[in-house]
Length: 165
Image (cartoon, rainbow, N blue to C red; front, side, top):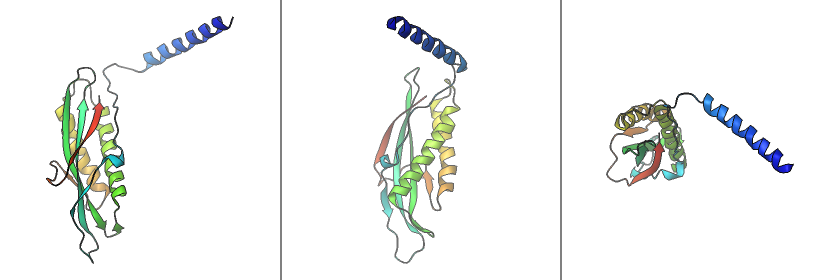
């Protein structure tokens, strides 16, 4: 009796799951997995702030994001750098705050660009679109923040795991 009830519940769950799978939509959509945590971004102080300045100093991080296509195994490394000031006119910017701002902008941009991609989208073009989006959003998020297409030579590149399409 209990076995029949369990089997009946399992069949009901299976039927619901198959209906849900049918409602997902076209199979050429991409689902993006992967996320950067703030603590993963390693900033290096490039320019110390000068005493008495309202704004100044600079920290920089080098970021390499691996973008992979799940159905083919194709993969590229998207490289760029980000700079933030140590202090703005509003006050000091902690490393933790700089890390959070950078991670948030990167995650937002990757979701926006990669979720609009198709299975045929060239990975190199997705990387370039990501950089364009990041330049705008990152530089607008903090006075004195800069996006770089090349990393500062004094930084150590941090390779982030796969953003899988």
